[in-house]
Length: 376
Image (cartoon, rainbow, N blue to C red; front, side, top):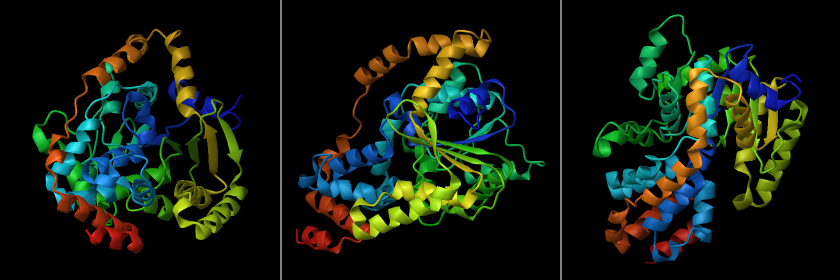
């Protein structure tokens, strides 16, 4: 069955017999099965630790509203303004993890000459490459994007581009978060000039497959996706618990779907489905060469790799088979060993806790709640 009819085959062909070089764009969703939190849960944990006493539970309605309305980068920028570099220590929770099937799939995609863009700052794709013997040199500093553009002709093959910076595990202390700090300082300014140019150029040259990505990066990636004209295809995989992947909409439906979602948002702003709106804006831009796929892409990728490791005896797949067999045991061991690095939050004063809350409410423009917080 062709990839035009079966999205499973699109993924299978990409790492077995690709007809063309693709670009994968991945977000936090690909790392959840590695024991890392998605962006929303990461943000909620953050707020529970540094907010007022009433914010000690992740199901708090204030926390729900803030994490719905603010991107983690915006949230972290506000917190950094109050707590300085201590806020970067929260990234310690991303400085570990075991590569899962998604990361090994992306490593094999790099081996086949595809490229990968990611907003993730963890190093799980790099670890997956290292584990099965695939070369990987990530690009995440603006100066390195600038150097990449100087090479002509531009060749995106087998490159990993990290748009929001990266943890640098070989560095000590807060220096390992240097590129992330730079990203936080640019919130509201968009991607760096060279970073944006690399992304827009690739959007014009390659079909893109989006996996585990919300599309809510309105301060960085989303503007580039909307303003870049291209005749290449876009396949957007939206996660649903159901296992089977399927194309769910034709391009003619995206505009009406977006309009209906905006109409619902105008009635109840706090319940607005911004992720669904954002991804449809991108799909509308690319119609009729845009496709929405719904289902469990992680499960599909797991099935693909399980099949391939049983039949392919190349060095990469032999190493991959060993890693996949020990994945669950390694993950359980990591969870037992993982220690909290948030002891500094115990010394946060009540004033700073409420100051931070007030600044966050300013950003979400909730003046009613802001007044009640400021009465403290």
